[in-house]
Length: 305
Image (tube, rainbow, N blue to C red; front, side, top):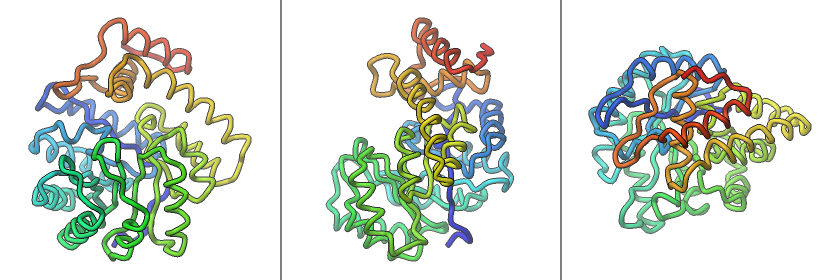
């Protein structure tokens, strides 16, 4: 198991690309340094925000190696190993371990929705086979199944399953997890939707895995710190900024991928990395890009491109 429990803001890092199988290596280095300088507590690679399921295995391996080398142990790195093929999850986890990652994250295998018993058996087998601690990933909108609280409680007893990231945006579900796992202080609970991070940390969550921290890492770290200090006035102040980002940067165009397009476009405008998206998704065009620029300027950011 990991020596210390991870707490804080863990950005689900985007994967900077120049083509469908070409990493933006210079942009990856700049983004990594941007996150570390912003004070984040760890980095999560190859999650939903990282477009993991659209990337070739070769590129995933290259990305993990590059980021881990650039981080050089300054903060922990987690690697997403979600896959429909069990052995591919294990192989990527082994690569992550060799590169210096401290843990891996896996959502349920998708396509046929597994039963809760199948999930228990799957995660138990996965945790047994992995060289690193495993974090569960509840992402029902993308994999068609909830990790039910009773299932999580059962899996939390496994010595190599150490936490869960919840991206359901269902506060009743998250509070149920906090209630049922309150007697297991070593098991970590993180919230994905940044709009809920302040509230969740106030109520006992260990941190947020927030996409907006790719753009403004200091802001989300400040929210975590304010929530930990129970500074409600500060939490409310920062929440308004987070909601401004959520309702402007993430809502351009009627795409299922609008959030991701917005984050990548913003980073491109700030001169951090390319905004290429993996096929079949494509980056924003001129009109949409102008709207992201306006949103960033309203937030006080300086666009360099």
